[in-house]
Amino acid sequence: MANQEEDRRRYPRSLQGLLQMAVNTSDDAESSTDSSTFASSVFQEMTEERRQWLQEALSSIAEDTDVKRMMTYLQILEKPQNDTDDDDDLTEKEDAFEGLSMIVDNLDNANDFHKIGGYHVMTKCLSSEHSSLRLRAADILAVCVQNNPYCQKAAMEMNILPTLSTLLETDQSEQVKIKALYAISCLTRDFPSAEEAFLKGDGFSILIRAMQGENEKLITKSAFMLRNMLVTNPLHKETLFKMGFIEQLVGLLRSPQNSSHEHIVSLLVTFVTDYPQGISECHRPEFDLEKILKSIITSSMEDDPDLHEEMILNCKELLNICFNKQTQPNAGNNSR
Image (cartoon, rainbow, N blue to C red; front, top):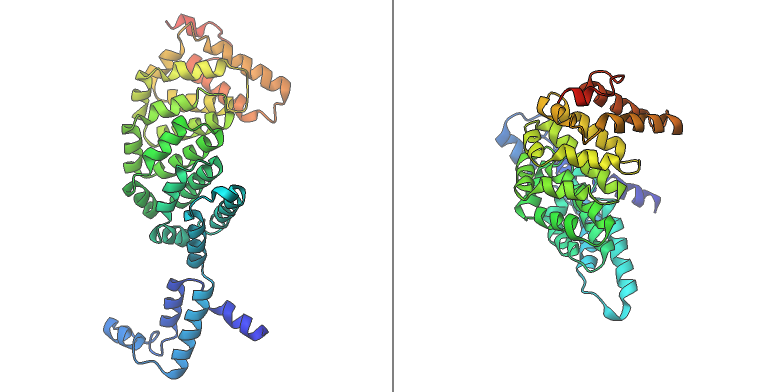
């Protein structure tokens, strides 16, 4: 029994791996350099021993593969809602999502997930009446498309981006909004066509509105995404400037200090760096930005300077960029 289990473990767990193993075990695969000779050697009539080996390997991979498990989970998620046993049905689907999350973080599995129809099922789940399913579907999509051009392209072809944007704008669950933003960020990062589509759909306004709420995670993730976009394409500064972006950020800094402030200040530093028009805007007397930044530094130092080290450094950098010297409290007014 132990030997059988050992044999099963030595078989590849994917079809691609199995084919590669079949090629590697070909009698002439290593010695042949001619492509036609190589192909004929791989696909020559099998010996009984090789046929038996391949049959066992195929049987093993059919019994237990990531693709098969994903298909099983998708079948569960596609089951119509059972009104008489709704709690059990929901739990089963949440468990299926947990199973998927353990598989799709592999690049090949993420690609296979799309090929077996996973995105169609995720799109349905994004419109589920259960927030737990909506947020899990968005999370699965985020994992699939992150740093994965194939999956990013597939998601764009299926027009998933507008659905995610709508969830970010209108969903009643803050957790769903956070996961929708996560998916949007992963989909658009380093994928210009997706970023362009997002911005054409009023993406900047969507992100700015997301920052106007009280959820610190949503504010932080929005600021993080905007900062990455500005680093990648500084030309976006002009568009955001015309939208009153600095005024929006200063307004956020006036709110009671929380964990999101560090990311807002960092975003503001990125925005004004090498952008004189933005620096000049920061000098508006009604903003009183210099006073705000110094107040943040003081409160951070009093609370825990080690914990707030990044916040303090960012505030000092912003003071230096906009007001030249932190010891000039009236520098902003004098520049007008």
